[in-house]
Image 1 (cartoon, rainbow, N blue to C red):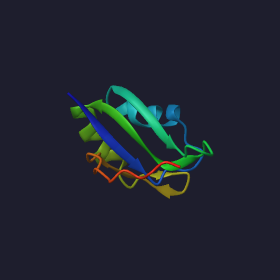
Image 2 (cartoon, rainbow, N blue to C red; image 1 turned 60 degrees about the vertical axis):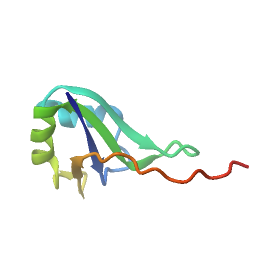
Image 3 (tube, one colour; image 1 turned 135 degrees about the horizontal axis):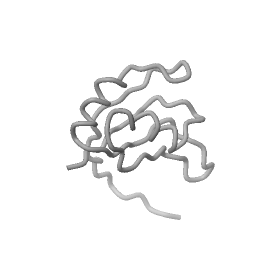
Length: 90
């Protein structure tokens, strides 16, 4: 079963491919996605990686706190999204 991993404090220049390359030595990466701002298209500084359970455990252990372009990464198992009240659209 695949695990979803949260990766925070990413440099603004990080791409989906960079994430995939960073995690692939630890196991099979199913998907890697850097979250972007809807309006500007610029990275929001975090992303998600989905990979096999054993690889996810190894990656979290190896990469949490690791330095990437001068930034200490925050890597942990992703938590389910909290439900928020809907906002009116104008």
